[in-house]
Image (cartoon, rainbow, N blue to C red; front, side, top):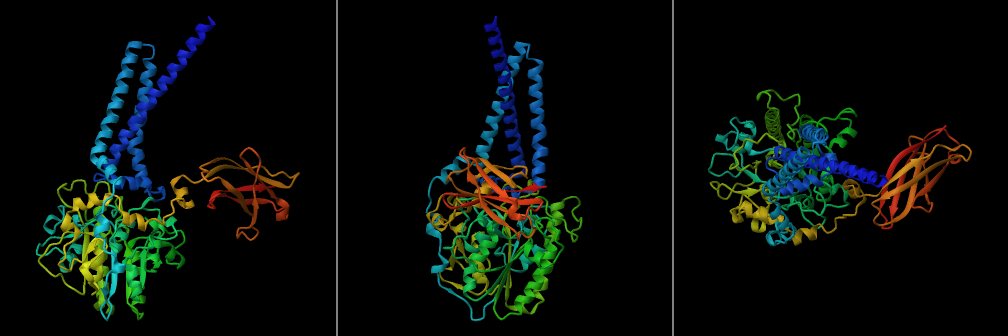
Length: 615
C-alpha cells in the first residue's frame, strides 16, 4: 500500500510538473510571437543590422512611451493565453480524452505559431544573409576608402565659415509627390523651398533629392560619424556605447581634424546630453570642438535646474542659443565651424513645443515636422541677414530616416526614402548642373569641404565623393544594394581603426550587465563594539578574480570626513568590513557607504552605494 501511495504521489507530481511545462511553453511561444508582431508593427522597415543595434543599446536611451506601448500591446494577450491554457487544463484534467486532445492541440498550435513567427522573421530580416555577411570579409571599404590624411587639400586664401545643421529624422519623404515626396500634403514647405532655391543635387529634375543613409549610418551617433568621416560606424561594441571609451577611433581623420589644422574655432551644440552615444567624445577627439549641450546650458543658468523636456530642452531654445553663439564666433578673427543637432522631430511622434500648431489635425508628428521646417527656415533667414553670411556656407541635412513607428507606414515600398539635403551659399557650383546625383550620407564629407572652396585631390575622401565635381559616387558606380551588402561584411580597415576599443571597460560591462555584482548588507550598529559592519558576498561575473574590496565612508554631505577602508576575506568567499564609529567621533545618523571591487586586471567597479545608521 505504501509503495502504491508513493507511485501515485510521483505520478501526481509529474502530472503537475508536466502541466506547468505545458503552460510555460505555450505562454512563452505566445509572448515571442506577439513581441515579434509588435516589433514589425513598430519598425516596419527594420533590418537585422538595426535590430542588433537596438538589442545591444543601453536601456537609458529607450523612450518610456515605447516601453509602455510594448506592455500594452504584448502583455494582455500573453496573460490571456496564460490564464486560458491554465484554466482549460484545470477544467479538463479529469476528462482524459479531452485533456490529452487539448494538450496536443495547444502544443501543436504553439509550436506552429512559433515556427511561423521565426520563419517570417528570418525572411523579413534576411538573417541568413546577415549571418553570412558578418562572418566574411569584404575588401570594399579597404579598397574604396581614401584617407584624408594622405590627400592634398587646398584651402582658399580667405577661409569660409561653416554652419552644419543636422535635422533629426528629416526626410525628403515628408513633401508632396509634386515636390518629390510621398505624402498627399507637403509637411515641410519651407525646407522644400530652401532645397529648390539652393543645392540638393537634383539636377534638371524639379523634385527634391537627398542622401541615402547606408548600413551602420542609420542612427544619430553613426550618422554624425558617417557625414564627417565618410565611414560606417562598425564597432566591436554597441553603437551608442562609445562614451565608455577614452578615445574615439584616434587613427581616423574627420572634417573636424582638418578644420582644426586650418585654424577654425569649432562648436558642437545640442539640446540633449552630449555624452550619449559618445558624441562629445567624438567631436572633442576629432576637432577639439567646444561642446555646448543640455548640461552646459544648465550650468550657464539658461533655464531652471529642474527644467527638462523631451531629450533635454526644445529646439526653440536651441536656435536662440545658436544665434548668440554665432554672433560670438563671428566677432573672432578665426573662421568658425558651428555644428548643431535638432531633436524635436525624434521618434516617437516628436515634441510639440509652444510654436507648433494643429495645421494637420491630430497628426502630431506631421505638426512637429512642419513646426521644425518653419523654425529652420527662420533660423536660416536670420543667418542670411548677418554680416558674416557672405563668407559662410550652410549645410542642412537629415541625420537618418525617421524611426517613428507608423508615420511612413503607408509610403509605397517602391519609393526611395532619403534624408533631406541642402547646401546654401556654397563657394562652388556643380560641374554639371543638369546631372541628378545618386548619393549617400558618406558623400557629405568631401562635398562639405568643397562647398567651403577647398580643392580636393581626386575629389574623394573616405567613402565619399565631392558632389560638386563630375566624379561618380560609389552609389552611382556600384548601386545602393551592392554597397549596403558589402558594408555588412567585415573590413580589415575598420578592424584596425577600432582595435583600441576596450571591450573590458568597467562602465561598458556595467551597461551590458556583465560587470561584477555582489550582495551587500549593512548590519545594525553594535554599540558594544562601536562597529558598523558590512558584509559582501554572493559575487557574480568575477572573471578576473578579486584583488581588493574597498569602501568609502562619510557622514558629511560634502564628503569632507570621507574615510577609506579595506574589507577582509572571511574564508567562505565572503568579505567583511568594520567601520569604526569612533573614527567619526561617534557621530549619530546616516553613514554613506560606497563599495568598490578591483579585479586582478586592475579594473575598478562600483558594486553599490548604500547607507548604515548609528543611533
